[in-house]
Every structure is written in C-alpha cells, then in structure tokens.
Length: 586
Image 1 (cartoon, rainbow, N blue to C red):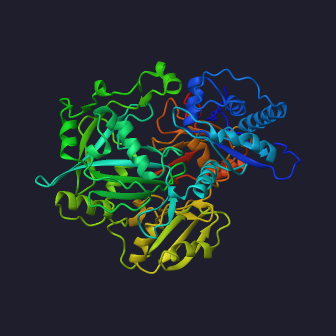
Image 2: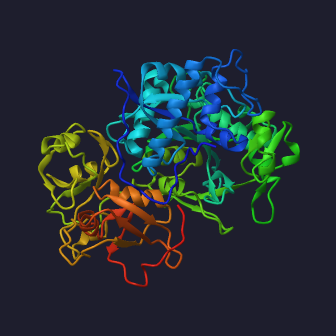
Image 3: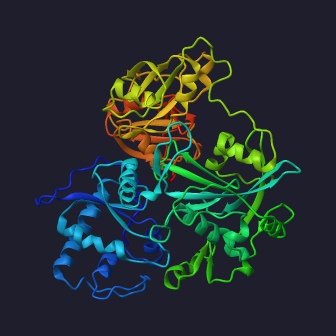
C-alpha cells in the first residue's frame, strides 16, 4: 500500500529528480485527507484509485472492494506508472516534507495532469474529496498547505473569512467549531458543552467541530450543522432546530442574532488550520435538560447509543471500520460529553474528572476575547470584564516600547517590516534586523498604546511567512523578560566536535511537539537535519538531533533559549549518558 503520511527515521537532504523535457511540467500536490483513511482501511493506494477513475464505467460510490484491471488505454497505464515512480522517488528523498495526507508528484506534464484530473470526480461513503493543486517541489509543510488553501479559495471563496481583531484580513477556514452555550441568568452562570475525544494522542474534552467537506458543505454554516448532527444530534435524535434557539443562515449571509456569536481566531502557528471559526450558539432549555438526564455521578453525559437509529460503527470497533466504506455506516467518534462551567472573570474551564481540555479551546477562553465576552455578558446578565492586556504589569511607562519579531521572510526589508505594522495604523519609530538569530528583528514604537496594538498583530503573514510578535526585553534581569521570546539569541562560540556525528540535545519542549515538528524547527532555521530521536525514553520533553555538518550544528547551538511553541528551550551538547538511543516515535 502507498505510504501517504511519510514517516521514515531520517531527514535526508533531497536529491534532484530529473524533470521531463516537455515544457509546462510542474509539481502537483494530491490532497487526500479522508480518502487516505479509506485507502488505509481498505488496503488500497492512490494508483488503484487512478485506474478506477479511467475504467469505462466508474462506480457511483467507490467502496474499496472493486477488482480493478489496468487502465484500458495502454498510454494511460504507462503514464500512471510514470507518475507512481516519480511520486515514490520524491517521497523517499523528502521523508519529512509532508505530515498531512498530501502526496507530491514532481514534474507532472500536461498529459499526465489530464490523467490525474478524473480523481476529482470520485465519490466515497466517507464523503471525502480529492483535490489536485500546483505546489513547489521543495516546499516545506507550511507552503504546501498554503498552496492547497490558495487553490481551493480561488475556486470557492466562501471558505475565506475575516479574522477578529485589528485589521480583519481574510484567511482560509479549514474547519468549523460549535460551542453550545447554556446561560443561567438567575445564577449568572455560563456552561459550555464538550465531547470527550478518546483517541490515544488526544484524550481530552473539546468543543464539537471538524473539517469542511467540500462537495457536501456549501459553506461554514453547513459544516457547523453537519458536525453537530454527526457528533451530538445523532445520539439524541435531535435536529439543529431542536437543540438551539436560533438557526444559522442557509446562504452566505452574515449571522445577525443575539443568540449566536461567530468568532474567527487566527492561529498563530496555524498551517493546516490558518483560522479556527467558533460558532457560540445558545441552546434550548429542552436540549439542556435532555442531556442532563444522561449524566452519571461524575457529571459525565453517557451518550445514549441505543437511541442511534442509523447504521453506525463506534470509534472503538476498528474491526468494523471497513463498513463505513463498504456500506456507508456512520462513524461515531465518541460516546461521552459534559457541561463545563466557565469562570467568567478568568476564562478558566472548571472540570473535576481529571481529564484535560483541548489546548486550543482553553487558550482561546483564557484570552477572554472581547466579542465573545460581551456575548456571554448579554446572555447571562453579567458585568463585562476588562479585556486582557498582553503587556507585563510593571512595564516602564517611559519605554522602551519594543517588540521582537521572529520568522521573518529572508526577502523582507526594514521597509516591509515597518509596513506590516503601519498598514494597521501602528506607527513604527525604528527597525533593526539581526544576523543572529536570523529572520528576527527588534521594532520600536512611539508609545504604549502602539505597543499594545503591535502585539495583537502576531501570527499574520509578512511576505511569504507567518511571523511572531512578542514583547522585547534587553536582558535577563529586565521586568519584561518573563514574556515569551523576549531576549535576543547569541551566536554559539564554544567547542564543537571535529568529526561526525554532529548531535545536540534539546530540552523543555512543549508536550504537543512531534518528531517531525522538531526536525522542522531546525530545518526552518537553515540547519541541515540528518536524524531526529524524539521523544527520548529516559527523559521527557527532550530529543537528540543529528546534523549533516558542523555549521548546521553551530547554528543549532545558537538557538539555545529560543522560544518554540510557547516554551523556552535549551540546546546543549549531549553528554555520554544522554546520547543513548531513545526509542521514541513522533
């Protein structure tokens, strides 16, 4: 079977793939996502699908159990074999290029592109859709996703939404999240509905939501309704109209109802999900009481599986997963839910069963976004709290009013950086870019108001890259030094090995970091990564990274005390004890 999520033990420097001499060839990405799960469950590959697409009679629904001969046209079969060869060569030479269900095929000729095109028309019980889009052959993960989003947005602009906050620039919405809200005006209390995600890598409480399904969903309102029906309504036999006191529009018009608040959050580290649109919607008393009838002694709602009327497969019955594709059975992702009280003053979610809340959900509420908090205040008759400031409490009133910008595009000039803020009405007084670490700069502003506005502009695109904007501090002893990413990094001038292996150990990594994430952290900073050992068996939140050459190792050592995914990491030379095989996987 074709390996779609490329996971090999080493990150090797890509070798060039000979391109066909025919003019007009280009690298194409094949977006699979849900179809990749179909291929895995049914033990098929992309090339099997491609042959199905070229049969004289194409199935209305591809089930996965069809016996498919070679393409009836010998020229088409030859082109399929050529595409497969180049795709496999590219995958082998770019082992960590793509972490999603996306396959890249370099140097596709116009004739080969015509052979791939019928994949778009295939339909499946899982409702996934294959998309083909142009992409750079040597693109990194973020650029691959951006190419896919740009391609889809050019055909279906309804997926572009303006984000909340200063300068509401539109970004692609890959998902929709539904936050069911129960407001008690007498108690002045807000409760939010969560479902429990039982997957091994998740195991947390989360709001209802999921990815858009193109060809099924006309817009994000359809996505929200479908996800709610699939995750909640199916258990209680209730429609959206029976769960919520108001309805979402049937067209692309804006929501205009006091019972609904749409908040579109920009994801600062978003690659697959540039934004997360949250639909906060007030539930009916009947739905609230119905769900409470199924609570156990812990307050956990045990979903009434006996009431599910459609043919279905539960998440823990993987032996029956093929029925989703063969028979169209519905896949049910969980069987527990609960109402969680929101602490309005702090944004904390109060749960007492010991299981965590999804990080992105909890962090959004802790930021207390003003439109959402105004919405909660109106529903529960609460006094509006002051918006949370991103400035430290003891920031000197006479300055300096400066930020540190990281992740800057290598082509960006000082004028580009200043323009990034000035186009949002923030006046810049000075820009200073650094050689160490590269792609970073200090930007100064004229007053504390401008500084506050500048900090809200983190996570937007400057030229081709999404940048991070954080509060600046000059030294470790400065009052602002507790803010993430505050200090400039220093080049490493200490001893290094004269011969391979060129290894470092990195510690204090965030628990969400994967093996591939760690490789990209250094690769994005011009360090040629050879291998990644993460997580280590004998030390949590740490990994060992080996580099191709000593200069890459030197640059990596200069990243000591850098901030990655919100945590300050340490980069050191490994000791004999720490340089042992770790035995982890990403």
